[in-house]
Image 1 (cartoon, rainbow, N blue to C red):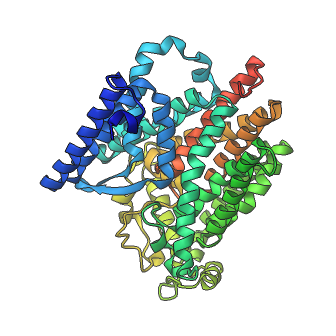
Image 2: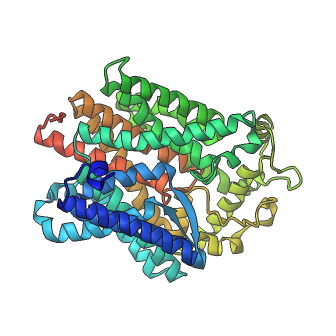
Length: 487
């Protein structure tokens, strides 16, 4: 059979030459990789194809990268480094493409985007982050962290701002993320069903898509608003509507059998957040949350009340049944909860040690064991997996000092307040759906950050910055009086 018959490209056409060259290069790379026993060689053609696509249509690379995120796999590299494949190399490519595009097309950029309060708050956060890198106790570690933060912001905030402007773009975002996440969740649920959905087998069913059941359940929880409100974009009982409804149900099943307490709480709070936005209570809710935590920390600091939370070492163990885990949680005998407290106590001492500049980004693990309190130690305190604070806000305070925490909180608060006000000024129904999805997603991530620290992961950090960019774009279009539509 002739090649032009298979590809549908006429003989001698430039695209046909490219197709033949790509096929030949791919076969050569595969053979070379097998012969030399060097697997990475087989990925060279795909890398060159992505480079060519970035030059021709970078928008397609952006959405392809979004589709890779739910199924990306964490790979360990030499030197103690790690990356997420295939999503992170695409982020690097998009970052380079962004620098090249901006250097040639900076006149086309809407300056108002850079002057928007959300962007200014993000710049303040990044500025202080850079300052703390310069004064870090481990400069190399912190500099690597700054680079990673740089391509996350470049791709998921600034590129997202260019490609996510109207309901057509919002729908593309939702579908590119939804389909692979839906398929990955079905795979996990099917595997887990083979073990009768037992609590102790959930982590083994997640490979290679998710690091652990917490990451899996939290991702499903924060993406659920996009899938739920995505049904409003389509006629009831149509094909896309049924697919999204099935997705919502599968996500709920996945969350239920992931046995993750934080995800359960997030789903309950999502309902409350919706009504907070609808009734314009965001300011009151944020003030209430600030007062609650202020009173709580004052209580802990009074007469050493924090010692009341010290666990009994012999009773603080892992549990193989979820009902026993819940019971242990209420008695402060659950090992994962009390290990968090162990690290939070260390974090509080670290903040007191360096309150202004912190220890430097990504350095918590390097130094925290020198500040731990023995009475809070648990069976897993050796921390062989090198996990961090399990509270992102505390981690920011430790690594960037109290000013860094204030700048990060400023960014989060501005996003929530502007998101609420923009929601009530938006008249186009499809746009309101996208805005509400993004705002709920952003707020839920903030709630989950009280018990986790996964902003620097592609699966959660992507939606964190994407949601903020969507809110800015919709706010700017409202100021122009533009009714966002499919056209």
